[in-house]
Image 1 (tube, rainbow, N blue to C red):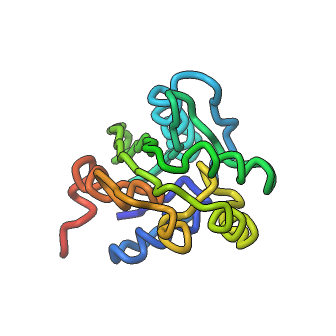
Image 2 (cartoon, rainbow, N blue to C red; image 1 turned 45 degrees about the horizontal axis):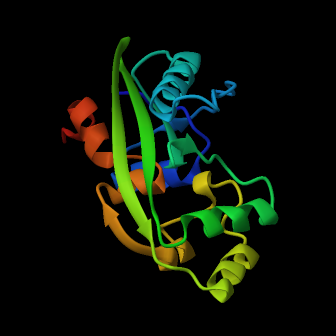
Image 3 (cartoon, one colour; image 1 turned 180 degrees about the vertical axis):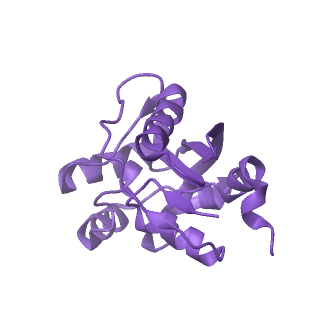
Length: 182
């Protein structure tokens, strides 16, 4: 079965590799929606990515964003904005939303994953150190939970793989045939 990941995300590719799946990466290049309803946008962005690369076999497309106070944060443009994100999220709970679309031989299957992440109360030194480390670059919400960003977190309720960038449980639910050993 031919499998395509419609994403250039190294985190998503790493998750699929760890699951033992062989796949091709095709970056969709679509213009993503932003500024509106986060739930709608993550699903619609995943749909747009999947449709842009749809072909034979199976296509996996995902869009993930961090939502605070009902608004998607997106990726910080620079270190100053990254620091503002940390200031806002310190000691608070935010949501990580992922829209996942899997196209199996032309049949589109979609779902939404939601994870609550609570940051501990961060000291000024912790914020400065994290921003200086640079891990925030290119990351929704300005952090990466799988590495140094894990030190920012007090509690997670829901899927950890969702926070990394690909909700494995939802993928299994939408495309169980990917996990059948021949």
